[in-house]
Length: 118
Image (cartoon, rainbow, N blue to C red):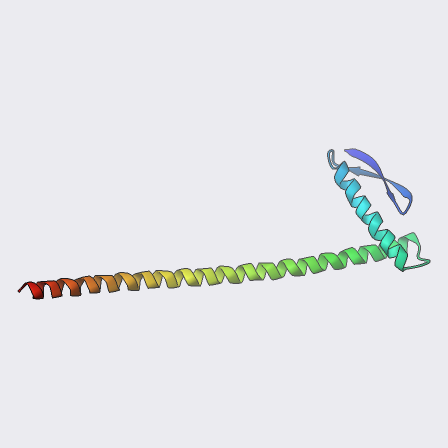
């Protein structure tokens, strides 16, 4: 287990993380600190806890929006899959029809050829 100290709102916090995850945790801390700074600019007089709750709500809102977008993409992919299956079915039906038509045309050409040879 690795341990590092991050700074949020000018306060140090000791954080334990998996070995090799230190840079990732540092980037997350920087993101959190930046978000906290943005909220702090817009909300005067709020304490640390209140600011962190506001940042948490903002993050939850972003997560919900992303989940909604993912669900929309999932539905689009599902619809595209159904459309693809329908198109594949139509292609197979068309191929059967073409094969039948070619056989029929071949038979007619052969019959005509035989008739002309007589």
